[in-house]
Image (cartoon, rainbow, N blue to C red; front, side):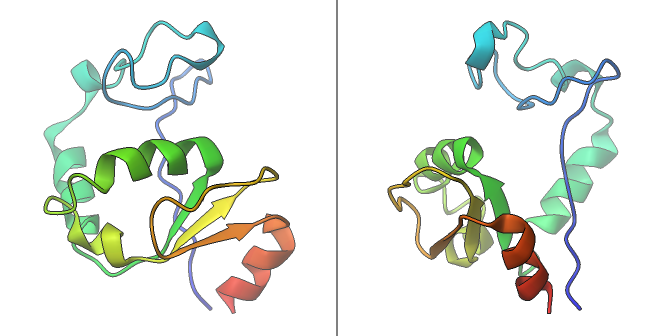
Amino acid sequence: MRKVIVFEHLSLDGVVQAPSGKEEDVSNDFEHGGWTVPFQHPEIGQVIRGWMHEDCSLLLGRATYEQWASYWLLHSDVWPVADHAMKYVATRHALPVLWQPTTCLKHPTSELKLLKQ
C-alpha cells in the first residue's frame, strides 16, 4: 500500500499558511505571509531538496495547485520531478488543468483509498 506523506507549515496557534513571501497567500486578509522563513532550521531545506529528487505523486488542494502550477511550470529546471509527477487535486470546483498530468478528485476520501491500493 502506498503512503500519503503530509507536508504542511503550521504555526503553534494553528495557522496553516504558505511558507515563502508576504504576498504568497493573502487569502482571508492574512498579512503574515513568509512567517516560517526566519524560523526554519537549515535541515528542513535539506529534507525538502531531498524529496524534490524522489519520484512521487502530488496531492494538492485547488488553491495550492493553481499557485504551484503558475510557479513550477516556469521553474521546472529546479524541480523537474514535479513536472512529470501525477498531480491529484482535491476540489469540488471545476478546475482548468494547467499542469499535466493532473487528475481532479471530486470525492477525495473514497478516491484516495483506491489510489493507495
